[in-house]
Length: 463
Image 1 (tube, one colour):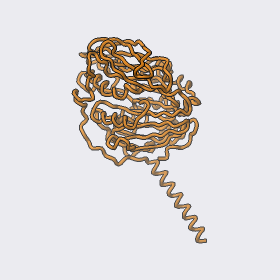
Image 2 (cartoon, rainbow, N blue to C red):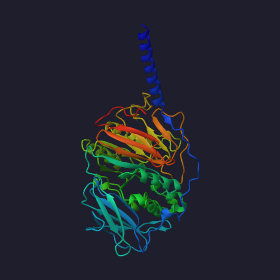
Image 3 (cartoon, rainbow, N blue to C red):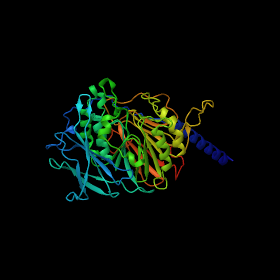
Image 4 (tube, rainbow, N blue to C red):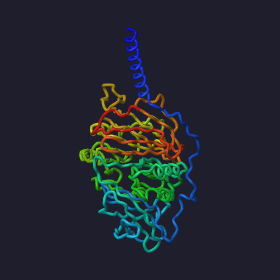
């Protein structure tokens, strides 16, 4: 009899422990780490990371992005300052045998009292998947050579390692973020918007677009970065006579929007290995029947989960955010598209904008119909996990004020700068890690295994 009583007590203890664990999970974790508060200032113009490459008319600010949806084309961009030069790119599979050539175009723009250099774009086509290519430009003056590796052919079990960076800017914290990412490594970067923060300088000083291009070249010249536009790319300044939104960004950073049927470069999709990634624009119209709305409606129907099982969405403004900074700014897009995301079984939604880090549980808030009072997010295994990675480190500084108490949808949050890496293993599992800048480059501060919503839609947000 005593043994039976002990058995029942043990069961009760396990049940109680389980209830306490569930309650702890529901509350989420606010990291105890406190970053030392420091002034956020852009690195000085003579910093070594902004150095102009030597040689007459040397190509600078070199960067690559996908030139089509699936990675058989790559667009190379660069700037020449002394004169136009040419827009030719020579490329091949060996450094000493650049036996293919492509001819690009160049553009130039004025912004208030600034005139850009000559901005070249050249798309290399008919590339093979998963292949390293060397490429060179600057012929006739100063030639510079780089390389990239094309992404593997899309397929359900093709592994891929992707860096996740947002709101980078060009401060010493930005430099630390890029250094940390270079150490953790990835095959491409999904960038959540807010590149240079040039608009934070007097007259939207576009020289800071040039310094940012030279600063980021050490990574983006060697692997594709997939661009999301943020509020600091809008550069709308009627007081300066500048009324064309996204002017500097659209001249400098092309996207492969046409290959996914998008009429504008600010929303589009790409396929990287086993992931179908949808880029949305928080600062373009997305209401019912707008071009972005109609494109997304059609794009979700084109997703083939048997080919690319991981469905990822990226926008700049987060749909779920428990910081006091930019609180509820992503709500209009969430209301418009969250039902679609749940119905499509989107796996992950990445955002920036808030200069801190947060990961949600799998939640949805789609039951509310004004009269039923169901206006609180609930756990939903059909729903995405939402990550805010606006923590690259920039001139505006850290978002260090959180809403209290921590909402039940928030799984982990920390007011720090850093970056993340998503390591897709196969059609069912992906490993995710977030790294804070203040630690060693290999120290992860938040990790979780995700399971795929299409092939393994179990609960994977228990921590």
